[in-house]
Image (tube, rainbow, N blue to C red; front, side):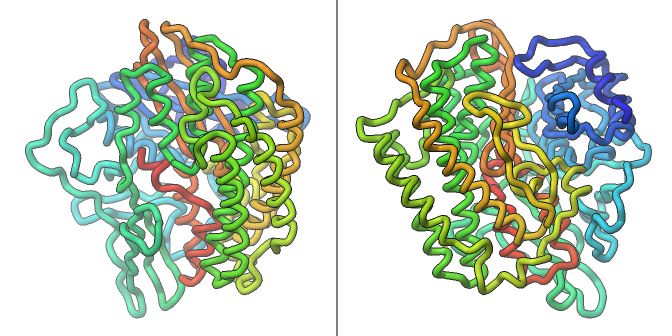
Length: 544
């Protein structure tokens, strides 16, 4: 298989990003990147972002069986009058990133034309001409292209017209004198029996804000469109100009229940930029915290699916196990979400005197309780089978991470494929089913694997210090950590004083929301809550 895009990226000038090199391309080379990506479908896009004057993208080349190991490639290019060639015609997962780049930095993706790699018709749900991501128009004044049109989506994503400044992360933000036009949903369907259901942004229960529009024919969903940005916190602006230690608290709060994964990825990037390795004790304890967080989040998603299915007893059992884990984390480290525990240089807190005993006791109880849970909630077992099926070609095209990807057969886990301590020779469960039943069953399987790993990590816990200081110097680093939702990617660049000059923090849900839209097309409306919870999406992690 050709490596046209990989070779093009590596032809750029290395920029000394550790441990994953970033290559600076000429603008003309970036213009050629979409065509090169079409020739190399195995090179998956993980994220795209900008800074004043530059556009960046992160790509993953997964390990081939018996071949070269997985590797991460970072590519950059200068903007030309604030514009860059759109990658979304070749990698549709770039669409949301491109819209966010325009909102935050004023970097506009421009259409480059050319055909899009074909996906088997059977891999995309059929739904009244809908596409796996986006729509055919946004309103009478701003047509919205379909994914396979080779055109970028011009609509705002994070900017809802409520910010004081336009392009707040640009070199010179502009104070607004009037609100900009609001991003629009696709027009409601027309025709006999067609109607539209709006959900959110304020939704029932304790749920993150998201505005969803479902086009319906009777009780069957013909299209779903999600609009996020309501939980925008200005995270990237809050991180800039601070020391890595001072900025870590904002990175960890990108998605509160994933504080360890995001905190670890940010710390990993800062440590790589500074050229420092953390003490062994801190490394092992980070692994303990990450696996505890993984089990808790899988149980939380499973409990939410049970509630949606009307299986209250199963939901209560899973929620009880999750609460036992969270309380044990609080007893061991002082905070039930381990907020601000993982920091650049190591850990901010060691195990409490009785912390290890509390963790081991909780693990025994949770392992016993997990064994008693069924793979799927009984009242909805038949509905879960076949609901929200995500075919492997579509999962690979969007580089679906975590349970969402592995339940469809995409074989990737950063702990094994982009290995980092303390993980070694991980056994990663996966499935071929691709439906809600497969995703929920895989969550329990992964939780069991983590519960088997945790006692081994505690047994291997060495004595020693838990943190080292990081030097205040220029550098650049990237960190990739396997969180409960998939691979978490953080990138940062430090100036001469060791302060954050530029950064990007990426949650796996960026690439999962478009896939939820795709799998709901043609599904029953009653299956939407089950599919949504089986994906385990976050709004806050995407809203930045």
